[in-house]
Length: 217
Image (cartoon, rainbow, N blue to C red; front, side, top):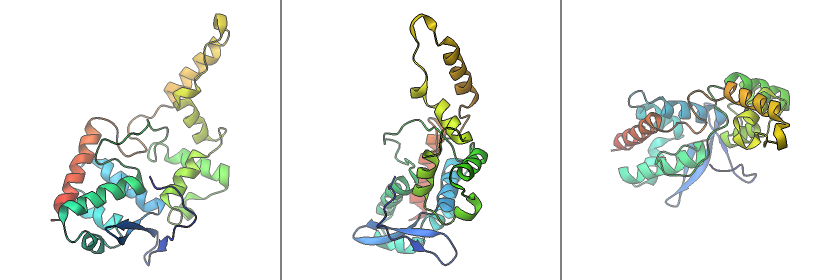
């Protein structure tokens, strides 16, 4: 995913939200990057319920016709643009072969504690900011919440690297048992923050991508 760049020139859009100039074939294609829109795109692609291309393409690009023109009206190149831009802006792997780690938070399952934790950690009202900040900024804020927030606690106990190492003669057995209990209690149940889990959802994502390419023809 594209990191936050202090020199990036985000473009405000007339209907609200923002777009990021995405370089493709020597031209700038405006891709929606505000957190609210990208989260909607992730939810749409992770749905797997029918062909979503008609909704996704105009939602993801500020002007999908200009994006298609930047591909010289070539459907295959438009498909590659979608594939690369979705990975760079949304962090979603439509190709299915990019390395990534298991997610520690999910925008749907953790919606309530994300709101609470952003308010507790930064004084941020999510409803006021979601159409203003970029998705990359949102991810950075979520990843930086303190351990003593609800989301910070969940992330800590979902991360297997934080499990205490056994001490000699089982001196910290109780601590380990408590970690294991919270690890199970706070585990993600379904979706993932990268938009899909292995198996069925990955297949749905690939089907969605195929539909997007068909829609460009």
